[in-house]
Image 1 (cartoon, one colour):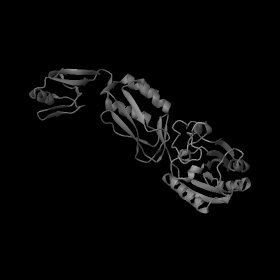
Image 2 (cartoon, helix red, strand yellow; image 1 turned 30 degrees about the vertical axis):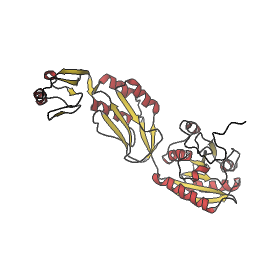
Image 3 (cartoon, one colour; image 1 turned 180 degrees about the vertical axis):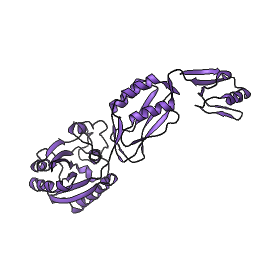
Image 4 (cartoon, helix red, strand yellow; image 1 turned 30 degrees about the horizontal axis):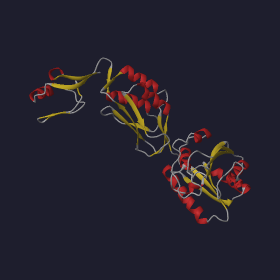
Length: 340
């Protein structure tokens, strides 16, 4: 594409690079100059104008943006009609935003003229929310360059929304003498509020003593009518041999990961248990999950509610950005004073 000042008399068919306002004449950036506009420019005393001109092999910004956007956008994503070289993406379903970051990086590495931006990966989104955009910087790009960028996106669209599923969630709460029934009741209310955006519901509310065999029996009972089992312990999990992980294994389940590099949320357990030939996820909730405030439990829960598999490697990669807040009142603050 050619860019620069030209005599008004030679600007026919060119693209206005900068808006022109003179004696009632208004030419907007991006307009195509025609004979009438040339006469108006000359009548207004404008002798020269900055324009862009397509060359052989160039594709206009809107067409280029749309072609790339259609390649980038995947399941449950709507592509908006482009305007001024920009085509936006919108979620067509509530769920979790899944991004192939490597593919987005490859696209943006091809040339500065072609860009893609998205919301952060694994974010919870609602229907109609803008989740990304393709922006072509100049007024046109070479088709060979666009083809190279499209190829860099890969064969699978790098942006899609994993839609929430109306799951049934079985909740088991363990009890100790120091735990008030009102605390458990509040936990269930908060849990129901967490599930509501995904149209998931609590299918079972079982309360047992904080003891391995009792909890194992409860897990085995609840799993049959649930897509997901969540255990709220009266005492936090501190070891794989503790009550909750031991109970999961005693019920025939398996521990995938204990602990996560997200704070609050460190003491989360994720595992699975077989039921009728199907493996169902089991979460041992950290204490912070009793609060409605965002914590690491939410990050894992949302993925599971959207049918996204969560493995140990996924948990272990949550550390960058995993420090959500500092709790000033905690007994042993992270930023402890140095010893004398």
